Amino acid sequence: MKDGMFVFDATVHCQDFTDRQIRPEDDGRHVRALREQLGEFTALTATRGPSVESSFPELPDLEWANRKLFEESVTDLAMSCTVPLYSHWQMGLGSPEVSHALAASNPSRILFTGGVDPAWQGLDAALEEMERQVTEWGAVSMKFYQYQGRDKHWRADDRELAYPLWEKALELGIKMVQFHKGFPLGIMPVEAFRPNDIQLAALDFPDLNFGIHHLGDPYVDETISIAARFPNVYLILPLWFNQYFLQPWKMLHRLGEVLLQVGSKRICYGSEAFIWPTIQPYIDAWAELTMPDELQDRYGYPEITREIKERVFGINFAEGLGIDLEAKKRELGLI
Image (cartoon, rainbow, N blue to C red; front, side):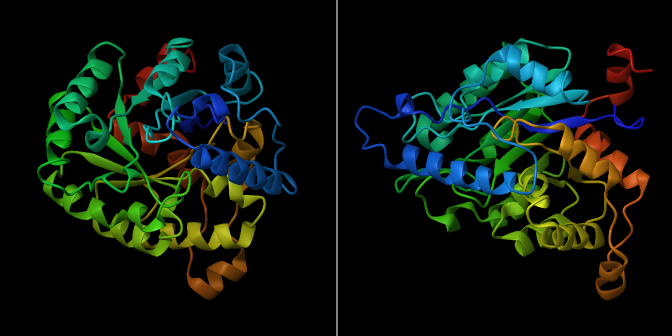
């Protein structure tokens, strides 16, 4: 815990960016482009923020990952997230198998978010795999990456391809589904990751929560507008935290708009480990963050209170997932 606040990291990844991921029939451009882009980006953020490691393209060792989370930071609970990107990646960028392996290495403190793709796997196979990941691997959520290629992409408001997924999620007891939005992971069209398709899905499935990652950057205004109007849309903020040290004023503007328009009850902390493996500085930054008087005066942004910090650190994500946080604290011996 951080100053008595429960820390639930919503976004932890086991990902392999190496050439061994390249599909045999593929020229490798997508894998190499993403590795180079992330390598340059992490190096840039490290000039003002937490250190990064040159080994980030490699699949992280599970013992090392647990040490980073629970010994070198005060993280209490973490979510191991699948990224079901298969079109150019042998196993998927963040495959369910390796994501589940991380969760299984410390099941009391790491939860598992599964992932499928109905356009790539086919709808029937995706539905079967969803059920398997929940019943066999204990997935508590599902995450989606909706563009595999020109002929294999889908929208969250597609009644034939997507709505059966949301019906299956509810049937399986899943309370939240999550989406990678904005930043394309490779040489892909950015407009494929606009968040607009979440609107009708959220409207038609009011009992299901929809989590949008990364504020949908560069579609930040659209993402905030959607979350402001749909009470079952949550904003999960990896990359906001990673960029904060590099661009504090820009990130404070974004956060201020979220707090002003959406409120504080559907914003969730995420570190984006282990691309950024030094986690504690992000926790410390959020615990100590203030909204500058200048931004409050000029734009009407609210003060960042302890109550807001505590909600973002863990209460919101737990509520969105339907997790009893007090029971989890008792299980971990924290109360």
